[in-house]
Length: 212
Image (tube, rainbow, N blue to C red; front, side, top):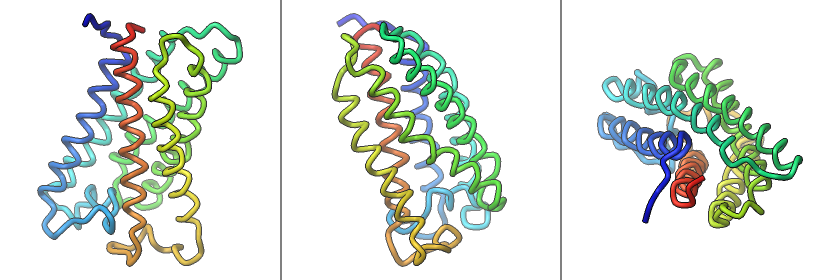
């Protein structure tokens, strides 16, 4: 099978694997038992909790965010026909660049800079599901779009929205500042991040296979 390597297909695949590798290297260096269900992703980048591995997670966020910028910019290659599809795609691309910069800020301002860190994380999670919705709606009728990408996007959207809603409940007000919460909220955070990265990977493979 012949493939067409494009800016988005290359950078999307790279972003997925770079984040995975850097994150799990950071987990490997974590000095105490680490459980995704109860330990926040951001704990990995906290030098007080993870003295050796923090740099790997933070640099993973910075590099991944940097690589995702050309991924989202390169999505112009879909060139949808309908005007509204072009508008949705353009808005999704702009939000994608914003989410990428926010992800870089997560690494630049780790948990030890909690106010800036939470703002950056909010930028990522606040835009993820909107980006996937806009992209899926824009491309759904495109003859080269593989619908499995949209179906997986629905899963990712539901996870992200569930996390955003549950974290606002009064009983979880201080959960983000808690090193080891008693409820598995961090598991939803992990699921939201990795399901979104899988969506990026699937869209990249879609473009590679269908020669977009």
